[in-house]
Image (tube, helix red, strand yellow):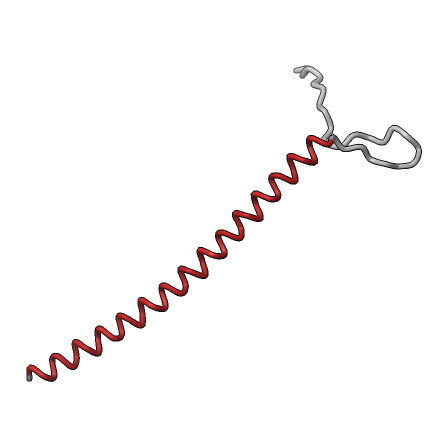
Length: 80
């Protein structure tokens, strides 16, 4: 039989020390989580903005390509 050593693990949320049921969370942990959340929100906003701009540019590209095709067709008609 193999025995594994017991490892102490610090819980992310401390258990309440009083009977009022209040959970104590380290302020540094809260600040770190808030910072991560803000970074994720900013990244999400940038991604949405990129996708909007990419969509607009794709639409403009299709319009320009259609105009080029029309001009090429007119040019072919003029040459014949």
